[in-house]
Length: 231
Image (cartoon, rainbow, N blue to C red; front, side, top):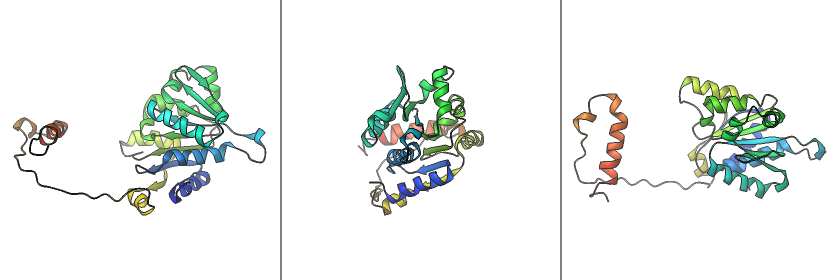
């Protein structure tokens, strides 16, 4: 059963047609995407008018999870795949972005992308890369263009503009506070304890701002992982 915020997000996406759903961890983006794509794909008054849609992913683990969830909550015969070794688009297709980019000039892939009535981009923050941008730009007939991510924007202005070009601005946002209030997430309890020891950076890491990453890795290694007093 969808949560209140998932229903609100779906309603917003249907109304706005383009935009970004910014959602905290544990929100249930998969269930929201399933509900949304089912609503825009199926024409319950005339199944001959069903409209092809897709969800784009860039990670194999997430791809397999999504594929299993879509087959669980939709008619399995309606779920297609585009991945390495398999190009079988159907009413709702789970798409591995890397495969789509590799073969995007192939007539079958190009026809598939241009046939989409709508799409969802999972983990949208990865899609500002030129390769992913080129793929989604071929979906030029898509009426619905939705992106999902916990951190969709604010990398740099150019990357943000490339994402906004594909999907639009943030149209719905779900915070950890909302998920806690809905009973979806547990309220965290943070306990801070002072650990005895000396925590100083070597001089080579104190000199300039460029040493920031060096200080970070030094801190993780020496102050946490290899800290005998802590562990």
